[in-house]
Amino acid sequence: MQKNSPGNSHEKTKLSSNATTGGTIPHPIATMGRFFGDGGMIELVRSNQQAVPELLLFDGEKSTRGARVSYKGQQYEPARIDRTLLEHLTLPTKCYAHRSTGELRTGICRVIANFVGLGEKYTDIAGRIVLGTAMADSMPIAPALLIVGPDVDRGDQFMNVLHCLCRHALPLTGVSPASFRSLPSGGRFTFLITQPTLSYSLQNLFDDASKRDQKIPSRGGLLDLFGVQIFRSESFLENDCWPYRSIKIPMIHTGQAIPPFDQETQERIASEFQAKLLDFRRTKLTAARSLTFDASKFNATLRNLARSLATATPDDRDLQAEIFDLLRDQNEDLRSARWIDPSVIAVEALLVACNESPGEMMYVAELSRLAEATLRGRGEEATIDPGVFGKRLKLLGFVTEPRDARGVQLQLTDKVRNHALALARELGAPESENGRAGSAHVADDA
Image 1 (cartoon, one colour):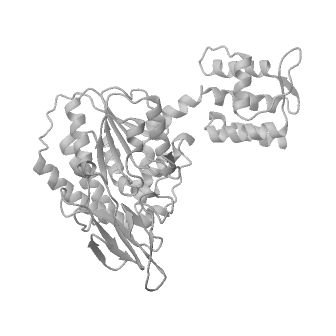
Image 2 (cartoon, one colour):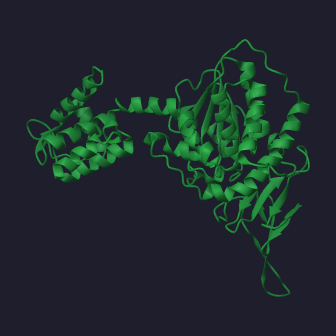
Image 3 (cartoon, rainbow, N blue to C red):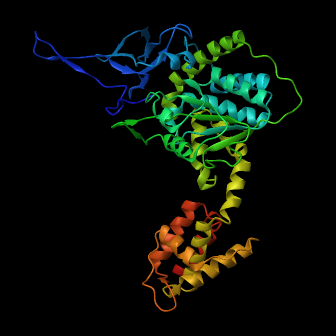
């Protein structure tokens, strides 16, 4: 759902001349949903899943529903959406009270556990992702849920369950960069994508679409394709494409039969939970937009994912506190990977050199040997080429001196040391996380 934005291609106000008064009359603005700064909200709904969409307006006191709604003197109408897309897009048919965030999460998790048979941890994660689809406007980054593994039947059923539960759920397959760009802008879809492979260009496009405030250029305009992304494959995402924003749920054979999930059951669950999810969005989106969540105990790479998960339960601090346990394994894996990351190793070698030889000139070849020593200390036997190491330093923003007969040098100035310290914190370097690099810096100053 978008704030008022002149750049949204589906929300342009057209003006027509009024021959009698000589003024202009604004035509209705086409929209798939809006959230106004004063708490007013417009949502896309329909009377049943086959009907033409209409708009539901909440003005803070009452609700209005119809093919057109008016808010503060401006009329709105549903954006035009291709018929084939509408046939598969999940929309609410009504709105009714969800009681509390905790109870809604429990109900969603119960449906997932009953029809998919996930363990408690993965059921909890999936439940928060569902809630998060209603709060996507407030997420700093769109999470990617990766449903990977050989149990095809259970994986497919999981996607069907999510199609019923998630806001603006849209199942897709055979997606290419061109077809993804053809989707309506600003719909805040939950993309349910089932296909065996993703090209690098498509991976990059999904990654671009995961940044809330970034827009994708297309045909002379800008597209807003931000939304939660859920992928299903047997194997294509074994190596996570986006470790900083993705959560993997394995689909392995357990020998347990999954219960039937027929059309009648799907319609019943969709009707109930879409109505509750709409009320959840209506009553909690303001809280989600103003939420402050302390993600400092997470690896720097995971902090935006943790913040995005926190917006799924914006009024429940106890549920937010559980996020660290849910992401603990992922946090530790990323922290371990940082120990041998080339950029982290380069920065730590520089910090060692700055602390031992402040102000001196040092050849890049010597710095590369310090980096090798750091790697060996972490159980990694590796040779670092000085030329490659020098290029790494330049990519990190360090400026070397002109080459002499012995090679390229770098002067270990305070500016270099401070830049290295800033990079160490930004990259989540082990030395910065436990405070050793920073304390060395303080000791030198003292």
